[in-house]
Length: 304
Image (cartoon, rainbow, N blue to C red; front, side, top):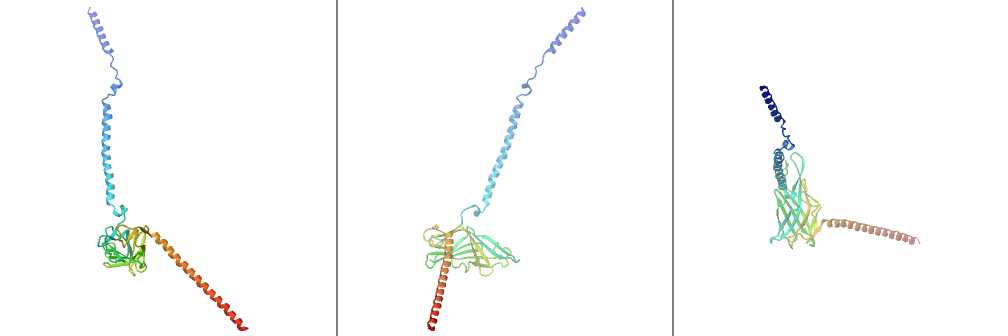
């Protein structure tokens, strides 16, 4: 009986253990292995950081780029940025314009240093040069541009018939102690150079009532007749003295017209001279032939 009970207990224990180990655990699916919690962290958190940092850098670069050109533009000189040429104007006592000069002008001055070297310095005529002059005379007027230690003077006159105006003289006065003349051999001297006798007759002759205009560069040499020499470079010039109607430039008289007329003026003397020489030669030849035949005839008549 005890043996029977023991076998029954063993059988029950076996049944229970078989039932317990026969239960299958659920197989993990692909969704259980890759949960939905980690995905938002990867796809949301990381892009948020990558999006913020570049925005800060880009904004910083934009500020730097826009401010740099503004600083460069501010530091550039007015002559380099602006396309307008400076206008110098001299008025009469009634406030009406007498002389108008629009030009980019440079004076080039040669000097010698105390070391025996020859130097040349270029000096811009500033836009804000002080303009003075005299317009009281009907046939001669003057205008001076003053800045620092320099004075550039213009003298204008009319032809005897009053049909044309011209520049009678350009003169530059300066002090040798100016900062542009480094190690100058003779400091603190007032030097005056001008167009001299070579150009004393006529510069830029233009019909009265018109403005002289020239886009070409004109170099006007200046000297004191001794060792001091300089020159004035005039670029894109428009000039008109003896104004009497308004404060604007009148119709233009181009320097190209002067060049063409100068060519015609040079051709005319050559043609006239050649014609005169031919006429003289023909006269002499004819007179010689006349004398030859007349003398020969006289001799024959005498012999008879």
